Length: 454
Ligand code: ADP
Ligand code: MG
Image 1 (cartoon, rainbow, N blue to C red):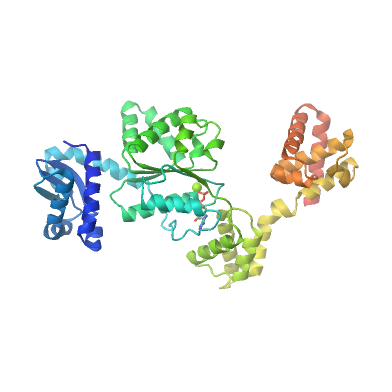
Image 2 (cartoon, rainbow, N blue to C red):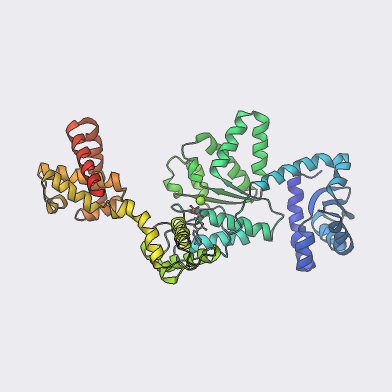
């Protein structure tokens, strides 16, 4: 008897042939919803969903299906039988096959694709066009040119959205393919649980993951430092890849920057397309915000949307949250349309906390006052010990309290290199541990900053 996997592969070929023989409607509604169950003694056994399904196939599609099956399975095919689940369950030789199929059903349950995460709802700009094109190409032609497809970016820039979009598209256009979307965290938990419960569960775990056609795995950076799970993932990856299955991976870093990723896994990733998504530019931000407003039925004036796009340099998720907040504020005031004033109000809360009240400027001012050293000297090039000390403390506080990128801090300090900034930061970090005097200074300055803030 042929393995289920082989049968499925052949049935996929049959579907390709049938697609050209039948009308689109008949194909999509009736043929695609058949499942192949067995091939024995020249008879192909197919599972239908209900009585009408059986009748439609028997009356309209049967001859085409038989002839297409002959093309793929060979001339020995004499007939097809279209049966319901209960018919199969009555036949002893098929009942075990059915259990297997139920396991596959289980996998599908993992796929809670968010209906709004479609390609149509994804705004394409210069920041994400290649990642989008890669995802689209995979969705239209899995196991084609880009395998694996590896997409990476900072948070909230659309990686999960694209994975869902691929899944939604495939479910619609190729429902016979087994598509599994899974977060890396879930993969890890699944694996760990299966180890805990013994060999048979590991086998089940492996079977589940080896039994799919398209694997969409989200946030692979969580494999960092998990040696055993990486090993397991490597084998899953290798088996799927070698069986010609499509794999799509997302991460918050490029494979080169996931520090503890095994080299063999890294080099496998490099065999496909590795593409990043960066922050959207102004025009793209506006298009995204407008799309979101439309989707969520928010009425927001254009000037208000433009204002958000201008002021927010964060990720899309945060911009979306801001949009919700603005709509909420307008609603509180009983307005049907959110206006600029609502945005200003909503933004104030978010922006104030970290940028408006506490800035690098203010930290430098307070340090300058504390040490009695001028601003110009703190930012300048003089190397006298007390000036250098004050400068390093200021740099340390800006790093620690604002979490600003080192390169940007370097710019404030007269274009110093980011390694110089890093050196100052690390020096004070260490000194605080060992030197009570420095620790006291830093605490005093923080206290003074608090007074300024409030
Ligand atoms: P990530 O997985 O990269 O952290 P998500 O895919 O969860 O990001 O995206 C965060 C939010 O931003 C989602 O609501 C998503 O729909 C939205 N989003 C991100 N990029 C786009 C885009 N280009 N067009 C439309 N929505 C987007
Ligand atoms: Mg995500």
